[in-house]
Length: 447
Image (cartoon, rainbow, N blue to C red; front, side, top):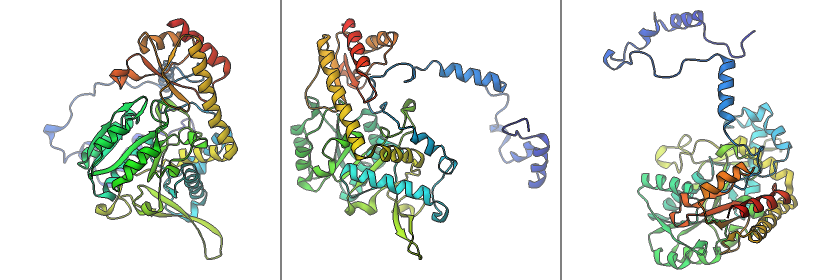
């Protein structure tokens, strides 16, 4: 066999046409009116031979700057973290790598158990009663939380902080438009959600209040104050959270959150130029039957052996459409498995240690940047991200940093015009003291 992937031969084509009773390919399309058929050739490049095609795409890939080439201080929702080597070994096994939705529990016990473990660990981290078997990513999980809140409360207004990731807010607005819901954005004061502004915006039609913890600027929101306002008139309290930070911080569940969502990317999932990743959705037992996606449950068979099955499935493929609570159609099982293996490998002590290193290294980076003449905007306690102010444009600074061997931070002026010249810096456990020192030195030399 000379071909890895066998192309369709003329003989294959002839045999298939004979089976379906057509004399030619043209006859297959005879129902399409002649006047609307495409004539001529598509305006696309001609096909390349396989070696040429491989070289072409390798050339495109080489234009990217990878995290293996240069140390990165870019976060803003996607982070470079330590991934235990066992993660790739497990998720590369064919029974997981090619797995689809585990409809048949008899032959899907490994897959179902992996998902069950993911649900359990996410529940423990967030301080919630239960978690579903993952979602597309953090932003879609956030939108689903808002939609579920509106359905549960029968209210139409969603209050979301401007300190929530800008892309997540855009996904929320798209979903809300289709459901005819009102989205009101809350201002940010001193790096966190304006509590006084929340009080003024809050009314009897508020379905939920959404904040991020740590927020998009890396700061810790006053969840206790926000929760008190949110629950004053039976609205839902939704918290989007970096799960790694919960290895160290007090969980949103302990603050009275009704729904905790986020992205599991910090656990065993590479940045991958922005995806695919894996969202999580955790909530209370009261809301269990309204959770989007599906839940895996643990049970026993007729012989008393432990087993796992899909239990609650609220998606439109499983129940009548008008009763469905979501159209989420994928549980990102492979990435959820990666997160599960990473969390298991680290363990409770390891997760706490990694989170602590993020906190300490970010604090050290702040100190070094200040010593090199960089203004650090410390307006609230933070985790592993913080904001600096530059006298030049962030785009200009990042170009020079790239030449010096570093991937710089995120330009906040892109989404927040009032923050022009401000850069969001991320420092994770993989950054070394030498890298931080040199980065601070190079940045200081630019200003």
